[in-house]
Structure formats: C-alpha cells, structure tokens
Image 1 (cartoon, one colour):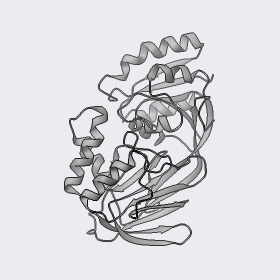
Image 2 (cartoon, rainbow, N blue to C red):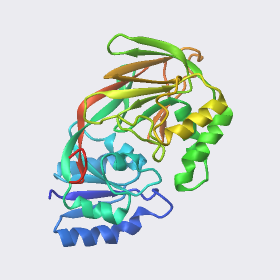
Image 3 (cartoon, rainbow, N blue to C red):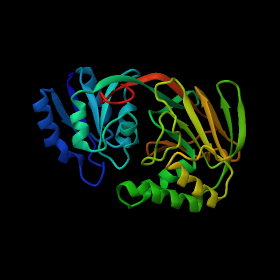
Length: 304
C-alpha cells in the first residue's frame, strides 16, 4: 500500500482523535504500512497537506464530515485521499462504505481500493467558494447548521436540536433555479439541497437515489408547507419516504444556479456543506464535476 498520512482532527467527537494514535500505529505495524500521524490546525492544514502529497503519501482524514470537508478544499482535482469515520457526523464515510466502528474501518483500510467520485463545485461570481463530495444546502438547511454549530449539545444530538431551533425562527424564501438544460423554476422553498450523495445530518436520507459516480447531482427542494408540515416532512426524510409529497421537488442535473428573489442587497442567505457555513450571494452556482476526486473505499463497497 502507498504510504499514508493520517490527519487527526482533535475536535472530532467528545474524545480527541489523538487518543486513536496507538491503534493506528499498531495497525500500520501489523500491516507493514508506512504511516505518519499529524494534527494540524486550520491554518497549518494547507502546508501540511501539500507536503504529504508532494511526498507521494495518501492523506487520510480521521474525523467526521467536517474533517473531510476541510481536507478536500486543499486537494487538486483527481487527487486521492481516504477517510476513517470518527466524528459527530459520518455521512460521507457511510456513503462510500466505511464501517461506523473505528476499529472495523481500520481493518477495512488494509484492503481498500481507489475509486473516482464526482464532486460539487459551489461558485459565486465565477470563483469557487468551496467543494463538497456530499450535500450542499441553502435556506433552512443552513439555518440548522448555524444553530447546531452554536449549540452546546454534544455529538449526534446537535443536528436534531438545530432542526427544532431553526424551525422556530425560519420560513420559506422565494428563489429562482436555473438548470443547465435551460429549465427555470421559481417558487417559495424552505431549503434547496444539491446532492452528490444520499444522506446528511447524521443519516437523513434527503436524496435516497443520489449516485456519486454518475456525473450528475440531484437537487432536492422542500416547498411551501407550514412549520408543522415541515416538521412532519422531516420525520419522513429520516426514512427516505418524503419524495412522494407534493411539496417535495427533485431534479437531476449537471449544474443549477440559485438566485434569492426576496432578499436585500448584501443580505443574502448563506450556503453550507458538512456543517461549514459560507456567505451567500446574488447568485450561487452548484456544478457537478464528474470524477472530481478519488478516494479509497473498502473492498466490499458498492462503489468499488
């Protein structure tokens, strides 16, 4: 196996991932793998990652979806990386087949295989703002993350608590969606979610049939329902049973431009992915990049 550098996120979960170092070192010794461990802060991450790649090593994100998100922002397209789930949200790792148990995921790494995955480039004013391999969001989805990030509630409970706090403050907003085939949709929506994979928020099945290897993305929009109606709808999302609802809209495309229509200049609703929130704009384009990055997946993964 190619040499690996494990990027440990000390903020993942309640227990520092640094406590996992002995397990990783023992696995590497038993598997005869050249492994190094680093724990850079956000300022150090770009330089540390560049050194790793320049040395021909595969970066491994040890943490949750947020750790993966931070890592891929600094990778060139078609770069190879891996992940081991150890965060409060592990939707990406689960989507590509990793066990949720860290010890089992570490064993899976021994026979992991590289595959190409699509990515979603999120752009404003012609410039890329961020890249995601999972699900991006605008509207209520962003409100939830803002509330969850500000919460003192631990781990997996953060997202449900964020949902109910955002429900108390949120509402629908008018938006125009322009798709790459020329179709234009205007309406009031709670949220718009460009989906590369199927789940976010700790297993909520927003787009059950999204395929990160088909060169497209699915765009899910939750329409003009009451707060009580949205609460009931979100309960169905956990089981992927929401798509038949008349106010749930789903489109497949290669790109979509989102324009808020009822917001004041400079007060645009933000966008987000994997818990990281970014400023909004008069228009934001979500663009699928077929085979945008490569990642290691377990030999048993359906993507292998």
